[in-house]
Image: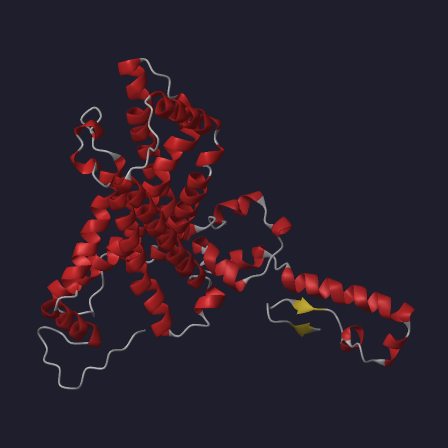
Length: 360
């Protein structure tokens, strides 16, 4: 009898689990020993949770601690202990909820402007726009907003550090939680951006688009126009598509760099350059992509349907705010103070040694 690592008395002997013993040379003698070994492994893997109930702190069992310290079979996890199960993807709850409610709001907002308004005012049936056109106006707004939400907490953190004059005080709990979810916000932004690109590529495959193309050609022939080329509209589309492709490519690099196997292969400076510098470049290009799409529609009164602004105006508000704050922090009067604080300098304590910028 010997005691294993879990404190359970084992009844197996050395002869029963020793593969190099002379008795194991015979197959018929080895088979029962193998069965006993399997039973011993099962005892070690399927630890009875009842043993833990006798401990003094059994009333405060932490499911996360149980997952780390105890290996158990899923079939042995009874319904009584189901309340201790950990929730799926806990870090994704906040980003997914925010993306869902934002997408739902933008879908209803776009539906009212693009579908319901023509039906009420002109009795025009535009409900065919729901599956592709309306959804494709929701996707870019959600994508750029989620990308902004990944960099907005960094702005708040910088403002708090500048106000306190130190980096050694804890952030508020809401900001700390938000900063720990930045990776999930970025990955969701890439997902919605990729969906936006796929939806945009599907435009020429729609039957409604082919009918409208024929109608446009007929109207051109009817008006006896040899060419319908519009120079500024061509430039707008070329620049708009180019910026969208580049920003999506940078978002793909950010998403790949977030994979643990890839991030572990990078140095801290390389990872920080990709996630911070290239991330702001992606946000800048995405904002420019939206602004070029708007082009001269900012001054068009017809865009304000039912006294509501178009969706691209709602989409660029937060990104422009974040980019302006980032540009202000790059000014020497702010950047030097921020660097000193991140070196360990405190406003009410003189720094006697040289500043060495370290990153944990």
